[in-house]
Image (cartoon, rainbow over all chains, first blue to last red; front, side, top):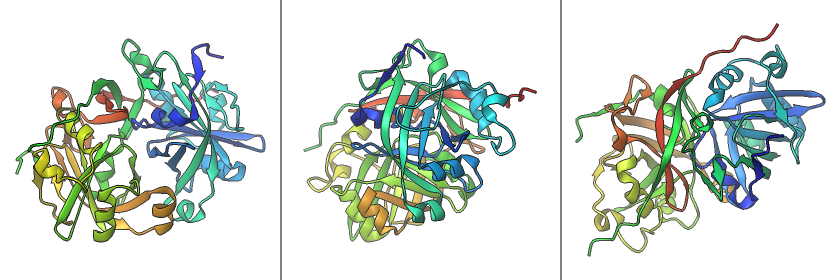
Length: 194
Length: 194
């Protein structure tokens, strides 16, 4: 277990996704497990924290997630860009990605799905069943049951990646081309014109 | 009209949101208009392009959007951080944000909602009515009808912000604290272990 991991209060778990990182989605059911990449994921509520993620009908992860009723979103970092590209473009039906690519995991506290080691944040979620969304839009909603983050880059409810370039989050554009998140900037309230 | 704007093919419009930027949501109805900020927005389909965005029930923009059945997502940039913070923390019920803060607009091609000038991408959308999602989750789905981007930073279906720091997209964490998007990195496929 990485000693830099710490629990994130559930009321602040949305901040792990608020800046729009690409995520890894993992699920496990009846002794099988899988992990895939998803750029289409976001927070949808504060407390209880909720998330939304789009999962194509062809994916093995989706089958496991639907069968088990829970999943994990892991937030990968720049050091893992090849891993993200690889699990996003291979199917777990044909091979065990964890064995094939040497993917290490951490155990969840609340769900059976594995947390992907080396990531910088994790959200353990239960599926909020919404068949219409799942069938019509491939859209899954989840309630956040537990959240952790790497304190080297997430402290006191804020991301700060300065001096930690290898831990910066990845933001997929297309075709394995990612943008890496930068540094912070503070917005100020403007004064309305009279 | 900014001469660096160009249409984005609808099949590639998802790439404008794929990296998870905070957006401005605008809507207009019966001579009234408004704009707000939203960090909870993402693509949900390729073609026809679809988007999802979370809009609190208290917002005036949501009322206009529901009445008109359409909206615009504008993707703001670092130069606009104070504007994003301001429109995200004021209500258009009390004042005309466009007049109060000198917000310039561009006309949409397909919808009545204004595009926010100075942003780096725009998606004109029609609401896909899903009352259950709207009432239960504040979640709105839209179909993308038209898309444009600033060719200084989005060309040939890719973002490239090098040399254009003021045009980098904003990714809200909390409380007016944003992360600015960085540069690109290419993921490579790993070779599975035997």
